[in-house]
Image (cartoon, rainbow, N blue to C red; front, side, top):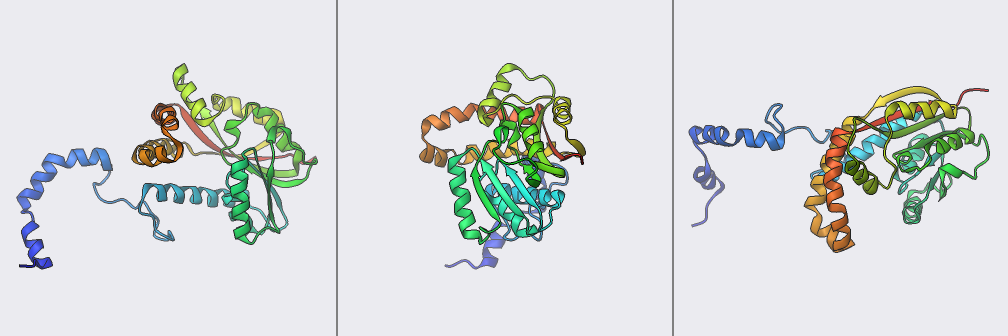
Length: 292
């Protein structure tokens, strides 16, 4: 005999006592995994998200897009402006900025594979008249003095072996009054050497410096600091999400990149989770090249 939906509901419906017993038995366990603010479904996805996301990876993509939009709001370009995108990644933020503001964008990167992806995205965007991507190292720019109205660097400066040189070169190519929007890590506390080493190997970067060191280098380069925004909660959540997604997609990652790559990344991902929660701050800084 085929069951109807009502029949199934009757068979599976718990009694109030069973519901209460479940929460008595497992409520604390669920709150440890889902949060204990209210023990209900949270609004992970904004109501206006299009398309809505239903996976952690989709949520990560949405978070990156929201970050890009926030940065575009803060750099405040006009259609007459020309921006240098330092460490342009795979091109998404540059194209999004050009489409939204009408400004011109020149993106530079030291990764040839990422530049190839930039060119693919640019070909599909219809914005080749306003956006270009090229190989470039911010510590040794071959661009003329005062050739850009603005610059931004999204998570690129943590990789630099000589951050002061990158700051000086960025200042040089900006016009007087030009704006530079920068995201950067800062060290909190005193982690042990193994934690710093794991971070440096995973991120391919020198160890982060304390925030006052970063501010001192910015001022020594000649920039005026117009705004500082503490974005640290985002890097802590990123560490948690990276850990979960790496574990969840481990087999897929191994199939694509090989067992040696996974074995190398395994302990680094675990250490980064702890390091990003306990020792890593994340800042957004709006800098200005002084007039005259």
